Image (cartoon, rainbow, N blue to C red):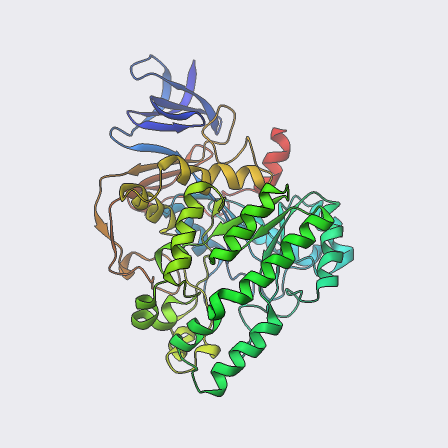
Length: 462
């Protein structure tokens, strides 16, 4: 047997569990796993002795900021971070300028990925134009995305054209999406409740990180819980497969658990900030740089339990870069600050560090970052698994490498990370996409435009 690449000496996280063996790659796909020492004619060998050989992360929630907000980030810089962070497939989000809501804007975004993305990709347009839903679905997308939120005091990151708030309108769109069989990502939010709650904080002059954090978590997360209850019930009524973004409360996790038991086709995600960057101390010390959202301790405990027991299916970064200037205003005018935090470069490593700390099993991490998002978003058998015939999207990780994250290593345009100064115990050393190095020895080596539309390969693999 003649192959292109042999990754030798490592422990391979195969679909059936860890295997001490050598991973073989031919023509960009996994060709097999052989015992160490078995003779194979390999054009190239990568030494992974003492390392884990893992499937690449499939991140279904990534904000590239292109087009329209390239001062924050673009597809090239996003996918450079992805490569360094072991993310081999990204799904972009529609809150762009113009927002991705029709075939024309989706075509433009596809062309941008095709010319500059280092890793494989897809994109989640907003289904706010009824007549565009079916044509966009036919272009190979794997999900739609909407926001149940209107920004207060700013126009971004939830621009006009990407939001749905009326429940009848939401059900109408779910009926249309159900016909396509594609998953529907929902950013849950009860806007009417939030208008009332945040109005109280602003009336008291609490336009601070602490005030903002408290408002969004107010009354045990009522704005999240009520919205998620509505989404789950409408998903049941319509038969539309749904995916809940930003899961962060105990009641929401319990609701998802019940819905799954009742047969509702629902998945949910945990973003990097919920388990790793959401304490009250983070809010007080990092202020706007930590927000996203505050997760009170009891809710965070429920998140970890949901990650462990499988209620929370997927880990996706919600990579959301903003400049320092856009963050700094938040110290005194938090409702004017752009919320969200960068996360794609370090999320996989933070998850592996959680394995070392005994908070998650390695199997669970691989499921959350790779096999489950692939299966639930229409890429099963092609992405997210080191099985024969699947794309050779591979991460080699050292699980015994203590190091400290610093702003100096950040590959984002914004030049900062909320994890600056945090020491962790696992490090990604190499990332391959379809058998080709995109990150090795601390350097991004992938070429812009190497990435391809992930869904197109999934269709070929069926």
